[in-house]
Image (cartoon, rainbow, N blue to C red; front, side, top):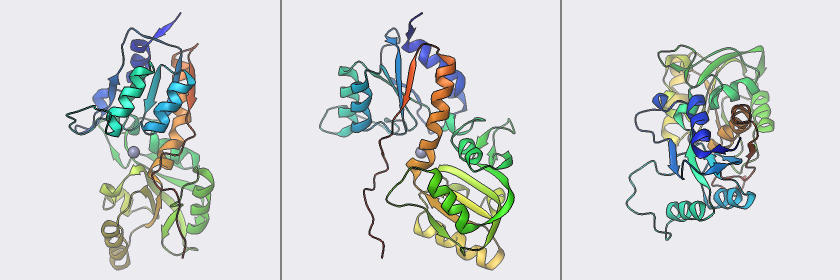
Length: 272
Ligand SMILES: [Zn+2]
């Protein structure tokens, strides 16, 4: 039986219910005809020119991304700006666009849960649970044995796809860590959360100078976690293969592929 975009979107919303998205978020169907047939779906973290071209080039009828392209108010989809160009290329190529964002962050096998699983954490729980204590933003869990902070950073570096910014650490290389809090994507909002403060290390992305500096200085005064800052794209890219397998299970007969293109914006770094 041929699947349609409506079938694919129903599978997506069953896995990642739109009702669970944060109020500011805009996931779901962004473009496409619900009646159109879908036999190939391509997954990426970001809908950008390269991933749109890749999806169309592969003959996918659906590009499923993590980040909603039209999150903020848009008054034009003219092709002199990238958002319009991405949408136009997808529409011309017969490829719909759907995003699963915070609704895919909170679920049992969401972005943070996959990162926690890949690090081997046990007894994991959300940093900030929803009304369901098994669901929520971020994860806290424990390693079977304490490891040096530097060794954990090296494990992350090996686990995540390579990016120019690499893995940055605040804390002594040999400091032992066992309880790990993490939030795939930008997690600075949770730096002062009690679950994060009680952990030995907090792994997240996009830590800016002031929030990171304040967290480290506060930790010197009253205790707190070491910090590991990883690429936002890399931390969420790890989830795509889990999501792809869930889509394959939900839509037998549909080919589901994962983009290997790096959509982390940085191309290179000069180490001093
Ligand atoms: Zn993100």
